[in-house]
Length: 146
Ligand SMILES: Cc1cc2nc3c(=O)[nH]c(=O)nc-3n(C[C@H](O)[C@H](O)[C@H](O)COP(=O)(O)O)c2cc1C
Image (cartoon, rainbow, N blue to C red):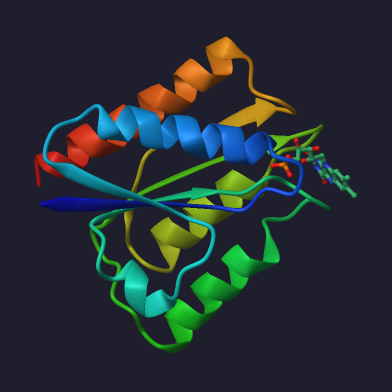
């Protein structure tokens, strides 16, 4: 069975709401196992065929746990090549964190990324949550065809 990880960080709950909706969308697709995690290891990442990372933007950057995870994966030469990657996150005014995540996935790990990243200003409303569900569904559908 295909496996997807939705890994997220959220300080005030906005990206968490997005992550829950991404999982909901992915679970609507048959024969896909979806794990929602707040923390994982570089080795664990290798067990998934699709990786969605949710990070809000703080100080024009991604969350430091997410950054460390990718740094460690690079140091340990964890092979993520051709896995599907997606990124999303809440933001206030600049919102660059999910783009930075996709850049690393694409350029460092040669992952196949879903573009553009999904960013939502502050708390997601119903329309925003629906976009998150669509992202999860798209990810799972692509993944289940591999
Ligand atoms: C100290 C601080 C720094 C922030 N820096 C940025 C920033 O650089 N760019 C941006 O778009 N939003 C910034 N924000 C806004 C957050 O991204 C926004 O509140 C977001 O909804 C937080 O998501 P979360 O609830 O998942 O933690 C900042 C917020 C705080 C409190």
